[in-house]
Amino acid sequence: MTFRGTIKGITAVTVGSPAKSGMLRPVALRSTICRADLSVSDLDRQVYARHALTLARHPSETEERLMVRLLAFALHCDEALEFGRGLSEEGEPDERDVRKACARAREVTVLAYGARRVDNWWSDNAGAFMRQSNLRVLTLTGEETAALQTLAARSMSLTSTVQEQHVWLASATSTIELAPVCRTAGR
Image (cartoon, rainbow, N blue to C red; front, side):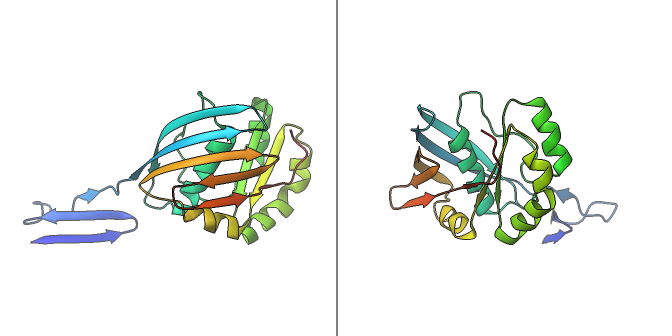
C-alpha cells in the first residue's frame, strides 16, 4: 500500500506498512533544477559573456519568479555573481534590510515585480529609499513578467541584450522586450 499526501507543505510517503510508531515519515519537497545557457550583451556596461547557469526552483516558487531571478542575473552578470540561498522567500524586502545592504555595499539594486504589491510597498518606503544614493529600485509590469514567464523551461538557451535601460530576451522561438522602470536616483 502506498500513501501520498501533503500536510502544511510537507509531503509524506509510505510504502508498505507504516513504521512501528504509526507515523508517516516526512519527505521534503525537492527543488526543480533548471539549466540556462545565457548569452549576455550589455551594451550599457560593455559586458559580453556567456554563462552556463543552474537554477534551483523551490516548490513554492513560481516560474515568473524564477525568470525574474534570471533577468536580475542578466542585468548584473559578473563572474563573481551567483545564485544564493534564501531566494524562495516571497515578498518585498523590508526597508531596514535594504538600508543595511546600502550601508555595506557600493551598489544595491532591488528588482521588484507584482504591480499592486510593488506600488503599495513603494509608497510605504519611497521616502527612506530616496535617501540612499547607492540604491536602484527597478520595477517590472505584470505584462512584462507574464511575457518573461513564457520563456521558462527546464532547459533554456537565451540571449540577453541590454541597451539604454531596455532588455531583450530571446529564445529560439520568441523575443520579448522589457523596460524596467527605475524609481530611485541611484546609479
